Image 1 (cartoon, rainbow, N blue to C red):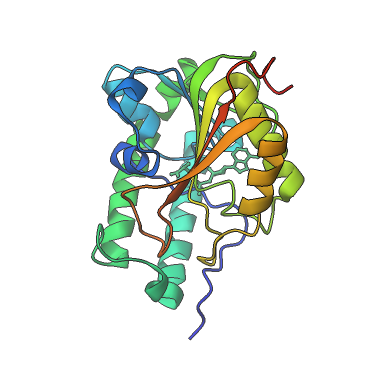
Image 2: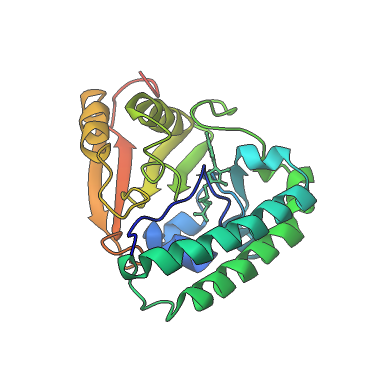
Length: 237
Ligand SMILES: C[S@@+](CC[C@H](N)C(=O)[O-])C[C@H]1O[C@@H](n2cnc3c(N)ncnc32)[C@H](O)[C@@H]1O
């Protein structure tokens, strides 16, 4: 049996507020921070935070599409996720979800919450059609910049320069960046993790890899936290 999780291109698949809180070790002070989610896709993190009274901005090239087109892509992704789980079930820890069906059902609820909020969020400028590595915000617009299930995961599509440029721009618009997970699509630690740590450290950022209380992809329980060093000069310098 194949052990590859074979997805063609970047898949629109969305996770919930509770999952984001675990991926990113979100604490009480983070709840009131100015947060940017890069590659937010059909996650319900933005709508869930908004309902808690904390406005989050999410960017994604997906947000250039209509609600109906996104819904079609999510339904297509559902089929691909089910067949991916069928061929690579042992690469997941079946603890937070006891089966592929339970995980897909949870994610579909999440994505329905996103879809119901999508048009309001577009007019509210909480969902912005933009893409890494060029964020359309002035320096220091956010306290915390997140990216879940995009960087590292698709390292066969986006190279080291893309990752460094993307993270530098996240740290230009925000004071701190967090990325989860650090695995590639086949469940291995991305080969870009060490060079990204080295590249960002060379550019005077403070980088740490932290274990978090979430593991669905087996071994996927590490988050990268990157901060500007105090007094390191202008953002991105
Ligand atoms: C697997 S989804 C993850 C969605 C969400 N962050 C989550 O964890 O639930 C990956 C997202 O990355 C988006 N994406 C693709 N290229 C991008 C880019 N250059 N910059 C930002 N997001 C991008 C895709 O459109 C897709 O919605």
